[in-house]
Image (cartoon, rainbow, N blue to C red; front, side, top):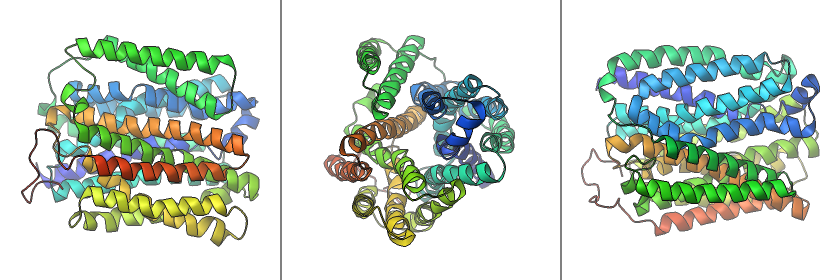
Length: 459
């Protein structure tokens, strides 16, 4: 494949992934302004953030399967177009329910966009140093997106309006649609035969949506009977999904992936890492800085710069170089061992000057996080057959999203019980020690695959 097509695939993937991860956090700092402007109650305002996660997590595996069946570039163009339209509706919303519906539509579209971005990378870059560099750039965008979302949320809300936090997606989305259509014309031969299992898709969507709602409700301290009922329904739906998937010929997750111990343990490690970096870290730092330290939205957003910058520098500059000399497993362990002390620092020290309470610990966390993400993505995708590339990336993204949801729910509950957000940061540190355990017990190579042995094979 030509280097020009590879570059086009890389930047199309990165820009599409940027708007997906940006919108996970872009309304966080703006929520008080949204609540006041649209006259929402506290619970209704929480759904502005929750609706995105529900739509995103609930349809990720379906979106990944779509990438394999209908063609990656074409799916990316259509799904980013839908995401951009939903952003326009949300940015112009005059009623709370319209904004919540728009955020849900964004999440549903993102569920198709995110796995398609990674699949586009793996299909335009052969295994080896070139793919490792591309994954490093993509993961840097994924890591930075959450931080940039908080920064943009604070600055844009203070200087212009909360509406711009959604409308900013329009020019980015338009650019992605144009480049994705150009790629679609050149890569139509990569489309694969197959069909979507509609029964499995419905069961997966319902199960994941119920699980996400139940976890979010527990995290918010809702102890009524409804979360328990919805959680029980989610468990029942997962059982039905498992039975249905064992009998269908068109599985959402191919059997050889589900039986691969390296894939399973790698995605468990990805979920545990997501419990720290996907939502929880940004969420608790945001509320600590605004409610405890008295920062304005702009100050809060800018205070995330050291964390975001350290992740970007390490992921873009240091990690690709280290991956030429070290295995993904060793870098994941090193990243976790660096990150955990930073989280423990945040647990212990919650009062004092900015340098001690925010700057130093978040830079430490950013360095560790920058070391982990690209090796994790490499670990769970190297050696996967081309026809399962979408399913593999879908599993990885699902692990991130549900790891983030589970982590946020558990951390919120821990903070509520203890009366301090320090318990949340401590729980994240414990999750990273569990990452080390999962990676340490994973096999050194994929089931049925000999250990990589050529210069073109990823480590």
